[in-house]
Image (cartoon, rainbow, N blue to C red):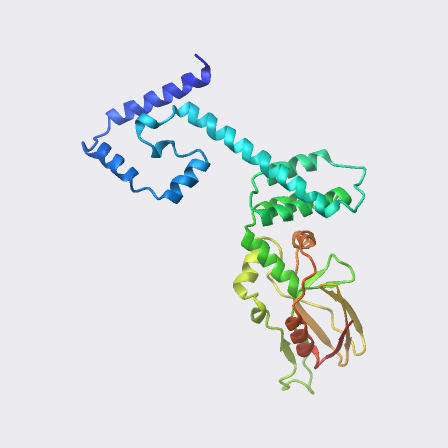
Length: 299
């Protein structure tokens, strides 16, 4: 008898001993069988697909516990293999026109496989394929830390990141991504009572409310604390890119700064997965809110 089988038998015997020491209702067994008929078909189908339906079956139809364990392990490995092969296949669509870099970090790829092989959702597989394509064409594009954060993100979290990217601007340095929330002029005797001294960009009107911002911060994608730019002088020019559209901002007043939420380094890495899909309505709103202090033009 194998050691593993012996351990399983000893475990079952210990369970039997525990049952003898427990006061059991004489109707418990019949109640268990009667409850089997009330199992939701959807729940039973899910349990069966994961090979964890053994206890839901009548005792005379149950496989041995050890056999059930082997079956579940085998199905789990097959599912992981299917997932990673699907991701690899999708990767071809993102890097077929690019030359794959010569240097590859095998440790990175091994970690990547471990983190991505559990992903079965087609949309999330597409994003994991983009990560692999990015690393193949430009090694170092995605850190292992970013992979771990992305692994823990749900499809809803990924959609929220896409929403944030659709409202964000980039500096000419693509590592700086910001969600502009308003503009503010330094108080002086001339403007202290002016209602125009501060203008806000209402992100919630475009699908990104405070709860969403909290979620993005919890996923380490943005800094929740708002930041401010340096004091901008009159006629000073700022250059941004809004989802592929160049944005030129020229100050027509002095001592003004922009307020914004800044993407974290991890958020900036993962933003590479999101294509340029801007919101025309938000761009017009942004221009309007900044117009008191800036001349804003987009090409």
